[in-house]
Structure formats: C-alpha cells, structure tokens
View (cartoon, rainbow, N blue to C red):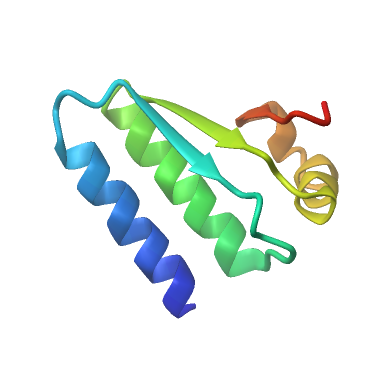
Length: 84
C-alpha cells in the first residue's frame, strides 16, 4: 500500500503542473498488482480525465496485462506495449 500511495502522490504532483497534457506510467517493473493497485490506477485515470490529461500505461508486464483484460480495464486505459 505504501507504493500505491507514493504513486498516487507522484501522479497528482505531475498533474498539478497545468502544462501537463500527457501522463505516462511505465509499468515494466510491476510483476503483481492487487485490488489496491488497480484502485490506484483508476484513481489516477479519474484525476487525469478530470484535468483533460491523457493517461498512457506503457510496458505492462504479462501478469498486469492479463489482469487488465480479466477486469475489462484494458478497454478503459490507453495501453501500449512493445509486445502488443
């Protein structure tokens, strides 16, 4: 949970810059994501949408891609990977 809180704070800090049009989250180091982590991604997505910022998830690992597909969040997020 500490990591998710840190990620949310970092994303909100980036969004505080009004010049931010795109926010890219590199998930290449994420091998496991739990419901708290998914909730954090959704919170970041909602914050970007509220500020008209485009959120991009990059380099998601196979376990994360699988969970995104199972939860249908792959249709909600802008995901692009070198493997896709």
